Length: 123
Ligand SMILES: [Zn+2]
Image (spheres, rainbow, N blue to C red):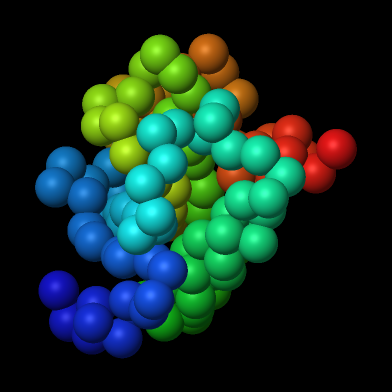
């Protein structure tokens, strides 16, 4: 976990997923306890934006940043394994296995994209 300390700040913690779905698979976790993406409100928008920024920084640092070849996902309740909000940042997408492509597929009934969540709390 080289340099992961640098990715931590007052608001976020970054860890590697223990079962990576691609070469790079990180969890961006807010220190503040939020149960899941459905609980987010407009007041959390800056935090969600910060989480996405952190994900983009990781892609930049680890693979010179092809944002199109990445997935930014939140679990959608009731399909979450841990009752603490976390953003999955997965790249490069082209290296994902068939099963992982399905498990981490945006905008299904078990997973939503970060963009969807941002849009949802922006109104
Ligand atoms: Zn997860």
